[in-house]
Image (cartoon, rainbow, N blue to C red; front, side, top):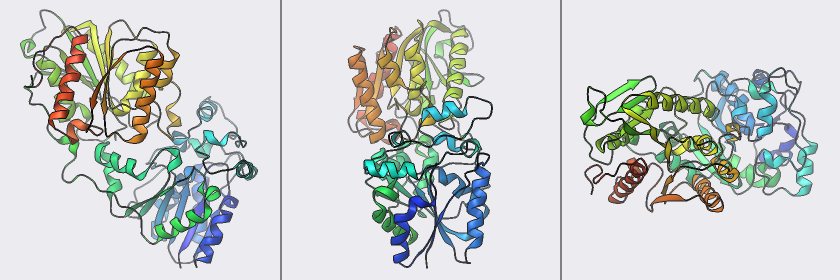
Length: 506
């Protein structure tokens, strides 16, 4: 007999599962919905204990432990303590928190971040009213009556459940998992597989054969919008079904050689910043300071990534490309390790810019910033208040507004919104767009281009029709090489450098 333990997201309790437990039990399974502690002083640890107590109260058989939204945090905490009691963990429209992560990082409502980040001892987070639930996730599939029902089942969320970090020892690493995605929120299994192939290396673990994926064409509360379908999918997950993802074979593609053949260049390290210098300047300051391009890696990336981005062939290749043409190519190792780290990463980039401009080999009035992927959100600061020395802002397959579930990023890092706010004379914008981009990221790029058109801000778009995210390493084709060549020529042209050849290409 399959035994399900069902843990719901913030504000809700066991009653939200009422229409799911019936079908599960009629199939012959046991179903045990959980109500987590609601006392104002309750924290994440208290919720972990709630789940552990229920596991200990059940019979000897293993359970399928389901965590919806926030509840994946106490679920994973409980599995870490009782891995032998759990046959499978199901992430129901939930994230993938790691050790040290707080649930607040995945809260989409910026008002909650303001409330809980205000200092002091904030009170419980008020439960949403019927018109406010969409701030916590897609309400697709919920009628007005269902939204009223959702509110009637809700209670304030104790604040420390959202702010206390999750602590994991790794004891649960061998427990099989399933992911159920509610696609109305913008994330699909195809998008996850694209991240496995083209995103940061940590996503490759999702291609483990013990991990299965499902989709439900509904919003964030499937237990109310399609309870029967959810019950069916939970039974299939318990049986080990689900779509398996594939990962690139061999070593990480981020370790592949750069797609252009480039000469080595002298490298100077200054804190988090590496400078790749034109050959003529080896061993001595330049007679005339050179313009510089600061390449800003994407992310989030794990803090223990080896090699770090500035030592990877990818960013070394871009920097050498700039150096081979007479500019200084610089790379910064910033600390964007999670979606709550954007302010920290922005500070690292600002510090690197100051170090770069202070170097005697660099012309401090001719600087370009080149942002990749998840670092695209950092563009908001430079769009809001562009300094005079910033001669070009380049973006490769960027994320240009927070993705679904990225509410913790905050309003500051919203390039689309910054562009729509206007009021500043912007430097030239160069945007390299992958034709086979993952849909959630592609949507942010299109919104940015619409906002640019409305603001009458020209954007030089370099299209790679057959390219995927990080096409330079995944699709090292003639089309990709031509796109890199064009983008480099364009950026350096805005710095006053007119290269004839790029990386051996005319």
